[in-house]
Image (cartoon, rainbow, N blue to C red; front, side, top):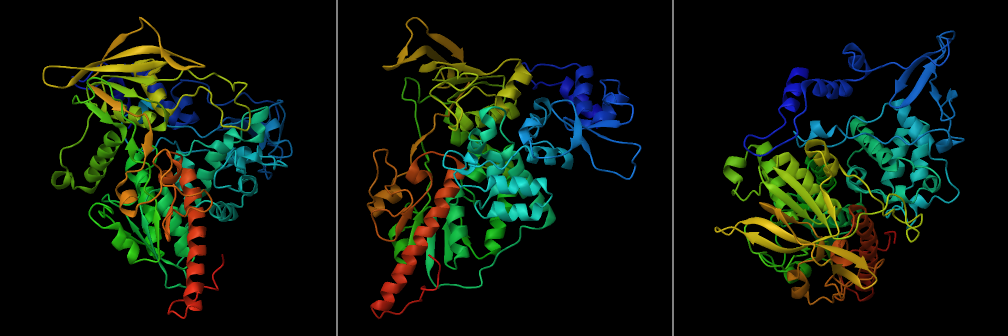
Length: 595
């Protein structure tokens, strides 16, 4: 209810937990009204809801941010006439695409609304007219860099499904999307969209809203019932074990299952999904959506075994001996540490520990098992001065999670200088633009506390503890980045109050239990050595993909490697079957499988 929302916003604080910015009831009402649409705005006299008619002969109203009108002299003509950049009206047309229409990405829910819950950030999205306008901005470039190696790692057929959305052919759009991407409901939410950084429109204007379009296509496909189980009609008799159920493991399992192989995925956690389930917080990716896809994979014939810690509780050599191929999709789970004085103090935690324990507690609370299943190991930021050391997506997720715990204050340290507002000369298109941006966590801190949480060019020197071994502060020094590397600035030491320090400085390598048990070759960064595109390790029949092979990377790159590994595994199984037949051994003949 409106009154409840106003009350919550006007009392935006935690009991004894800190000083949260308080909004007046009148501002809260305005925030509420803005979410209810133009009619509520007008009813409360909080703003002009209806645009002034552009001409005496037209009715004018708004669709998201594109004004549309219909001529009252032709009441049977319901074709919307959209306001273009040059001030004229006309039917939606992609001939001039982004020249005629401005970029208008889907909005997030307001920060002062979403910090009260763990629901997804995304608002309801655009209406059909605005979605068509945004699709029209894609002009079918001669060379669509968005789907090349500089853009989308899975080579999504972006201009094709944008055009299909523009034409209203949504069913065909999801078919094109699924040809290259197994899980667009994941990438459409958590991917930073390198495709948009490589969009040709971005050369002279703002890029197409590719990520929003992908998300809209898959969401509608689920709503319409177009995403259905694809149970293979042919089985090869060959078995594959996949260790790890993150995006790489799920992608390789999906592909191999569709090729007819029997696939079993082993996951050491109690739920399937790896990073998707426990590493990415609920506000970015609702876990029901992860479980929905996992349930469909089960219907299609993939077997999942949870709480199976391969290399610790289960001998990986035994597993290998009982399958025809073994795929390692272990992820890069060894975090980068901060070896400074006071690191051992209580209250200093790795980001994944913080995020995972929070997500487990949320899921248990939702399932009603928190009283029996929770081991009380939850790391809370409530009422604390929180410092997140390290930026990137993981750092932002820690910020957003701390805000929902209602922390007392929060600061985010970044070692590197503040990025420029525009591309630097050494960062040309179509590379990923290394420019200043405001992510969801930063916006939430700014809305509540009144300032951006980021402190740039800062290095942590020491954690300071109290008499009980708890962290109470930390000491930093400002740094300068030059040709000779990073150097501290003399006399720049500062002390910061800190009850909870979260280390979000990335990941260095996979854990080595399985690697050592199999005596696999590794690269200089302790990742499993396997050539990109081939994915075969130094041990026959063992393959590696995703972050455990390439190092810490994006979900979309994990899907890319999972799909590529499936092709390599399938080729290996075909070759093995043919060899078995040539040797006169019993076995399935896989010569009919496409390689």
